[in-house]
Image (cartoon, rainbow, N blue to C red):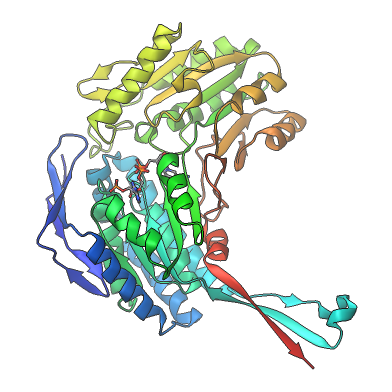
Length: 475
Ligand code: NAP
């Protein structure tokens, strides 16, 4: 059951704004009303850019920015249960996972405060060339300008934190457009920033039609950088439309894992069962394609399938639940269609593939041809494939057989095989003896190919959100 319905206004220029129009937020689990938020559009987005520009005209020194970020981290900790309940209610995320997201957001703010305190340029070794002799040069790192941030529904608090916290650390004001399904978490975060003493205009949250608000972020020249997390189609299109801005993209994946016969199969089965189905697979690095060396294939399935069967499917508000709903019935039905496509092409369904009430059961698909959607596109649902392989070459080729490249994993006790896989898997990150769903918030996180063009994590995002200014001194 959802918590009591919340009502929130937009946050622009340090004020909570009513628009006269509302956007309803409904539980993906039972359709009940979770809350409503004021609905904005192009006018509110422009007003937010005005407010951000005004805020940046009076820069905040790094020590103040860091102190605000530290206070936000403390408030996130103090109100973590409320944050987790909000995430769970609007995204349908099981409380187990929602509590982890809230704890991670605290870490994101803490790391951003560290980066605010460390932000510095370089000394250029000028006498290293005859032309520079007699000169000293240094670089300053200056805020790039107003940051436009667009966030997805699946981590409605921590992925907002991954945009807002490094932007503030860099000295940039933010105009944020959260996903329409999950605006309440973003507005709660804005409230915490306000309480932490962030002056008006540094964070502005505008909810409403994506195209309208997105157009303002693309077209208004005062927005210097757009940071986007979401689906590949929307992200790359935004980048095409804004060739003169920095457009940083964090997009999807079809996450592969290679399991060698010398891996600890009990450990692998436990980690993969947890990480293929948590939040119904709606993480960009949810385990999706499992490749097992042939001699270990049956032994792996003997350990894996009972763990999948044991996952608790149900109400995300219930502490025992592992797997809740997909964000919409449209998405659920799409995943079922993809299962049918695989089945019609000869795949076998080893678990799930059907509804439990309104919810899709955790689904395991064997013998899927390489070109069916579940084997190469992003499922974004509670489904994984299992495939036997004979050589590491073959496993790496199968894992790379997708347009995506965010994170991949390999389980093996052979360090040479692990390092080879790490070099040859065409992904932004490779985990060894850990599920590729793993992420700590200070890590450089991002993809290659269709998965994006940047790295998030406060230390990396802050580089993108600052410009290097060269200063040359003639002595
Ligand atoms: P989405 O449909 O692309 O939406 C993401 C955001 O973009 C939402 O705020 C959405 O607003 C907005 N948007 C949609 N059309 C737009 C337009 N024309 N102009 C500007 N903004 C627009 O993605 P999603 O379904 O929320 O999220 C799932 C996807 O995100 C998956 O592909 C997943 O892999 C990816 N993801 C990637 C990462 C990563 O770090 N790499 C992390 C999490 C998720 P509305 O909600 O109002 O439509």
